[in-house]
Image (cartoon, rainbow, N blue to C red; front, side, top):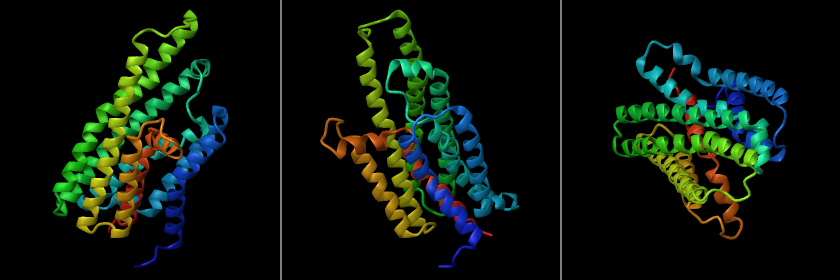
Length: 279
């Protein structure tokens, strides 16, 4: 296999590390002031954009419609984690009602970013399906696109629930000094727990099916596709495990269900597509 030039190898390495670094800082450091994380995020976003440009996005200027479609599909799959990298500074959502209300604007921004990322992912998936079908594979790519199209409305509803419904509900609980939650509160939480599981399961399923399609068409190395399939199947199994299962299953199930995590493999697929953009 022909090795990449140094600049492209460096870009590829940085892009591969971004999700890992974001998760490590987000959970390890937690929430910091927006005066710190916004400038850092902007710098990181600029580096990521420069990296994808070096890797293959510069071929967007190519006159070939096929190459443009390839690059745009890759960029749309990459874009959600360009946005999600801001979560390194935001940290996880607050664990208390008061903490949530104190950072209400940030929580609404967090879940709005997630909604935007989901929409970009769906658009990228549609273009990836078209590319794979042009390569002669229509079975797995069609099922992958269908799974992701089913997941998107659930994802948007779930993120809107967390970002807007719960924020207003928590604010009302504190203002009214409600000691006991309304009768419908627990049933609604149970409903959205099921929605969350279904949406994440469908995203992992769509990713696995796209990986199979990429393997069938020969666009990706079979070994890389195998990793996508294994991790996707693992995510599907872990997300449906009950939260009360013994460790490490409980924590693993929690991690794979975090809204931004299922987008890591599509992000890596997008980066991989850029790497394989034709000259």
